[in-house]
Image 1 (cartoon, rainbow, N blue to C red):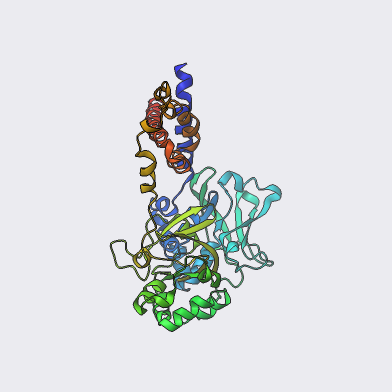
Image 2: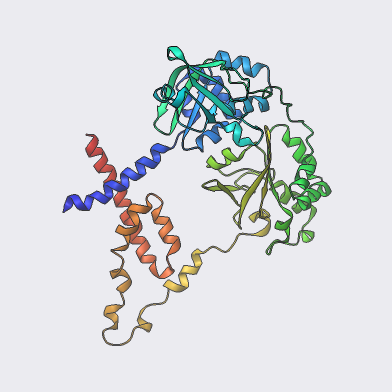
Length: 421
């Protein structure tokens, strides 16, 4: 009987362990291999590391420092990003799988294909099992050669991430000759074409567009509300703001760093904006659900709707709501005080005479079955999710569930330690 009771706790721990094991950090892994330090550095500079970390199943084809130096010395960062994105396969290949390719050859999708800049097969890689145990890699574009070959295995976390070294860069036709993004890219024209004309006009009339253009040279991410967002209910009358407040509002819609969608999906810390002044003021927080990325201001959320431009070091996104900083428009009412009026009255006045006092504690009597049902399936975030969906009358149940969750994790960890010993 005791073994049966402990089984859900052990299952809970194994689920948490499995989820944790599924995550990976490409630069942290490569930190143990100094021969790929330059490759790792360019993954960070181009923010491809965030794209890689946000994928559940992936293969990274790395280049040694000598090979990477030759590639980097001849091309700007935007071109290097395109080239390296062709070395990230959206499938899992380990040495065994490489030599068991059906019919000896296959085409694999890469991160470059997902950018929208790769027509036809330009974003695919040809992998061919050659005679003599060799495996060749090349662009899938017609007429391309298998100029690179598999050298060795670096690291595998089956079937999550595989890192393999190849001899030479995989070069797709035209990928190295693409023009670098112009320093004077027409931001307002891009915004107007994307349906953000109101936002573009505000940038020009306020002069903030000059701030954007200056920041874009070192790294900039713009979150542009579409025209409909300015007509939505609850958007303040901007004509009532001072010039300084309008400037702060517009600067709040841009981050002073280059953060493509992959980087936003994995970011944990608050995102600073051009309006940030320290102490967490004018910052944004980011949450991710699947492929959906949402920005939070403290007043309301705004979903990233589309990518207008992603060209290192500039990224432009459209968002479906105007970002309203709490520093200008005040915080939304906290839900916490709402619990007080429900819990404060004593149950005594509403109890009928006679046996009613015995029935009053019924919510507590019903509480024991709830934690065993919710906790194992919701770990480790089950506690907060149950709390958010329950009514205030079940606050006591939440306390019990939280306590049981803590005990469950502790016991699970103990069981796991016991099994290891």
